[in-house]
Image 1: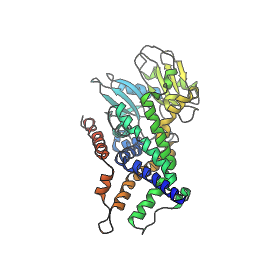
Image 2 (image 1 turned 180 degrees about the horizontal axis):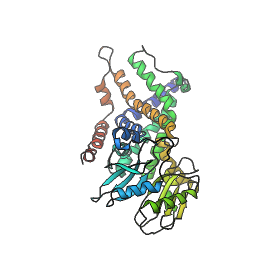
Image 3 (image 1 turned 45 degrees about the horizontal axis):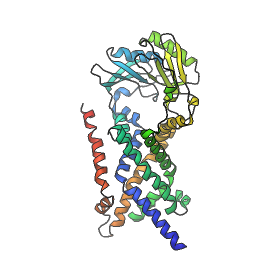
Image 4 (image 1 turned 90 degrees about the vertical axis):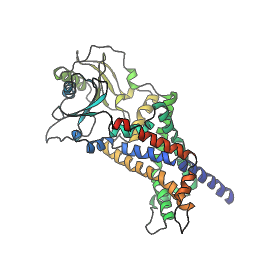
Length: 394
């Protein structure tokens, strides 16, 4: 009986090692970019002076209509497509527009004065992190499929951990101790981080698998598909028309927090944000507003969505930890950092096991242990970085 139990544990250990090591390079890269993407806006804030604003004491943000009008007026020949208002108070509001050449541009606005304070290209650190993390800068269909398939070894690592770590619940207090041998210290770190990261690994694996299902035919209808088909004259672009129309729509929905405005040719304005429904993306709560007549042409709320749609709308808030402001973002960042270290520490443990006391760890043997897929994984990482260069030097 004891021998059978030992063989069973060894089988699970081999599965755990296979899942963690064979895909370690790609898992490390995707985990790292996803972790940094949690604070993508803040990283751009550090690198882009135009994004930095200060809220004067006792001052409230200007009405959304004034900000949208300022974006339109900044470059009259540009076509504004959206206005992002759901950012921390020290980050500028941001409009996305297409210039005369058809290139996407960002227009930064001071939310407290409605003044344009800068313009930059659409591609920034935020886009780099999101696109490398989501689909490795590859065509969406194939890149997202490759990243989504990583959810399978993640799930295998999660499940197998319970079988190879006896009485795993005791591991929460077993942090690595200074003075231990490198192999023991890294082994303790790997187990300790793994135990504390179990809920996060499961969540990331499940949401990653959901993205894969969405990509291959299991996507739910968009929340905005519940809106009636409405045609409209081009919406006004001046604050005198936009401000009272938007304010009236918000007054009719007192629980609604405006996060984003979408502008489309021949369509009403789409006001998107958060309402009473929990764990949904901003688009789950959408108001279609005709700014000419100051009337709501259609509306959808998160509570109206089907179970399938609610699952789809919850995926992003859960995957990126955006549902509770900085509290959840900090927790997700720490968890993501732990998962990134886990992806690398498993391989390093192998290097230590394959080494000797005299020569130390054997990275070459560990590199070979990853198998032939290591070259494909390395190529995908390098391709992802290489495909970024045209955007940087454009």
